[in-house]
Amino acid sequence: MTKKRRSPPELRSMFGSNLRKLAQDYPSISELSRQLGINRTQLNRYLSGESFPRPDVLGRICDFFGLDARILLEPVGIVGNTDDPLSGPFLSEFLGGAFKYVPEDMFRSGFYRFSRRSFIDPNRFVIGLIYVFREEHATFIRGFEARDAMLEQGLPDSKVTREFRGMVLSQEDGVACLVSRRGGMSGSYSYFSKVTSFENNYWLGYTTHTARERAENQRVVRVVCEHLGNNLGRALSAARTCGYCSAADLLPFHQRLLQTDKPFF
Image (cartoon, rainbow, N blue to C red; front, side, top):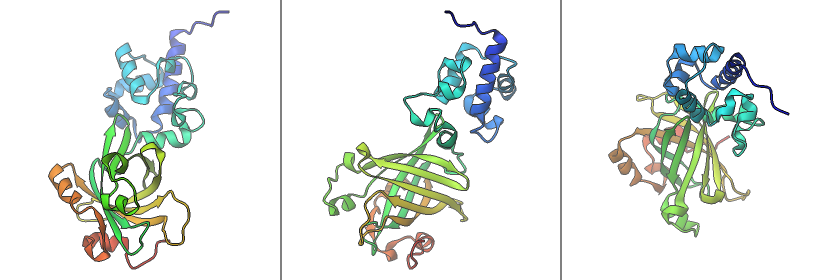
């Protein structure tokens, strides 16, 4: 039995419906058209089902959303990449959009210096460096554990074992980061919201460590992130200060935001 052949109006209608659903994850049609590199007037015609994109433009749209040409024939919940749970129909409306779009002004690309209380020694603090970047429509994070922290725990201090990577999610009043070490050996969940400052380059929040409860360890601590921009020299200078330190060694504004004399609730 052969399937019913879709008419051009039916194809345009399905494509428009799918595109409207995908566009809900973005703050405006103007922003989506900018990221897609498609004229806003033309994009509105696709959204309304009035027009259909050329093959090269269709390919660009499919690549951007991580879909394939079935976007013309089936509802987008079915078309989603079943190999990726976040793109599947069960989670796409709950987590998919949060991963797909994080506005630049919400959490900028570039290097960040962060400081927090140590998870394993509450009397010391950790200074670190992370790099945030965007690739297509996702926002990623990468960094390395401090070498002395690894050695103190009896762990290898090679670059491979110290590296961690993750993704940034858009939240209602800030951003969240899901981060893991290679092989999923351990991870963390962090939340940040922007802090008023002279250069508008500070974020304050908390981070949680995936570890069993122990009386001597903390699993949730405050964390401060300071955006350093994309200047490699400034990042390398900050990297030289990474590792363990005392509260007195923290930068004054970091110390103030961390409220080092107060417990975290």
